[in-house]
Length: 301
Image 1: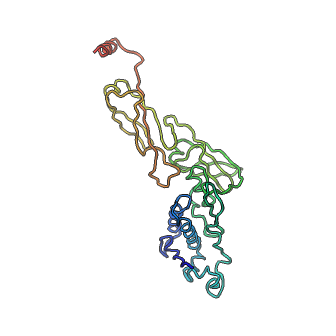
Image 2 (image 1 turned 120 degrees about the horizontal axis):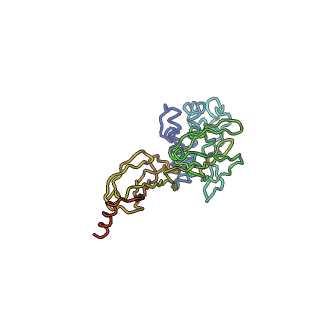
Image 3 (image 1 turned 180 degrees about the vertical axis):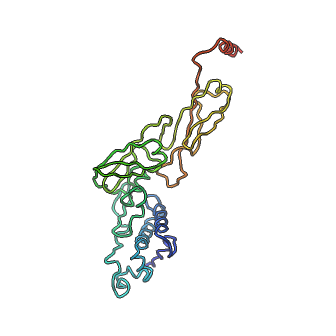
């Protein structure tokens, strides 16, 4: 029989780790080793081991017993710890890694008890699976069947969807604060314990969006398009000075790499789309006699 690794080593923390440190370590490792994202042969066993360690160390009573008796506290053949008593009152790890057929041949993992919700502070999700639904843009990569719940549509401002924020809603005469994840888009689906919400993003007066990429039109005078110069552009990150090259043509587009919206299905905050600026040339509606004369001279040069 294989020897179990120390739970603290599994999570990479010390015995004095705080609840927040345990949660952070678990969350990072669970996302790294989940079999739907990690295709290494030992991903399933790693994921099961990580969950098992967190379920014990996140519960003060179970952690105390583990610190005193080690893995023997969970071994029925050892009498469940000191004095032959089971300190967990029938706590069962058999549910960890229990597998059922999932979408695309993936496996679904269910927790059977204890330990709390390590994702409890991430937008009101009622269980660990819901954070993955958010990051994968509404799709459930675990293949778990969702329960039927009331489904609501919530309109959110364009900039709230891009930057993240909160929106207050009243459902069944109760006020709820909905956390909008940065990078949310129309169709982004969030599941809560009592209801589901799908976002509808309101249009912006200047910016347009395709996925994580942001587009805008910038009008410049035709003299500046011909002669070149400098113009100010408002981006998601504030005002920016751009140089206009001489002989800029209508429709010329400038790309600002990595300055678009955050990518919802990415686990790196720095992972963003691109920002595109398309130049439109503004021609004068009226010309003075002198201006017309100069243009005619230019056309014959």
